[in-house]
Image 1: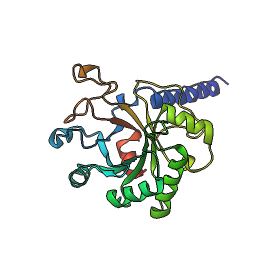
Image 2: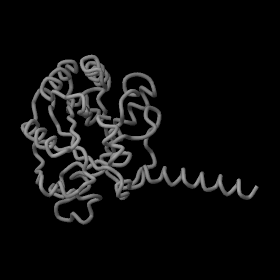
Image 3: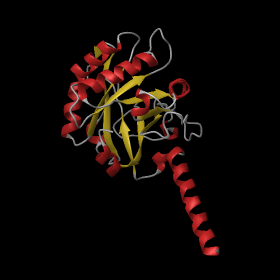
Amino acid sequence: MRSVLTILFVAAFSVGTLSQTEFDQPWRNPSRAIVIDPYEGNAIDWDRLAGDKRVAGIIHRATIGFRTDGQYLERKLKAKTSGYKWGSYHLGIAGDPIGQADYYLRNAAPADDETMALDIEGLDSRKDMSLADAILFIDRVHAKTGRYPILYGNHLVISEISRVYASNGAFARVPLWYARFKGSINDLPKTTWNTYSLWQFSSEINCTASDRKRCLYTVPGTSHDMDVNVFNGTVAEMRSRWPL
């Protein structure tokens, strides 16, 4: 009986440890993959960036509403020839989600091995793509490519999706890219998603130029304002699961 209890205790402890690692500073685990998501305003020193072998993927802004990111095409070529997994995201604005989806696909021209993503920055109906329109965007991308984009949202957005849509509909079919700029979380809404695929944990919100030692993670060749994400798995797992 003692041996059985011991096995059960060890198993329970291991599950708890894995769960804690998932939501408690997972980037401190040297096996976890790191993904950056720049836009045209972020500087990148590619030679220095190559020194961090955990940085395995780049998801670059391709479009915002009906405007194209000026650095997208140049950086796509550089990143792919340098061996990085590549992806693009569209920053959704209020109005015409079908037109935005078509514009994004036309300008990002995502290949089958490239991640696609929709970025919902907030719940302001005057400027942000609404959640109802986000569903139309997601369905349009799926209809034209046969694949779903991943969804980027902060805690407010993800909480509202979980409250309104639960586990039904388009949101439940897409991977979660969660934006939360803190060292650990214990309140991820789990009605729609059980966990995240990517967690954006660092940006200029919690990483300052004057004191980079306090930043949660520093990616070489980038400044303090680079958005940094941890993948919920190892570098090898990320490479095998891409484009997520």
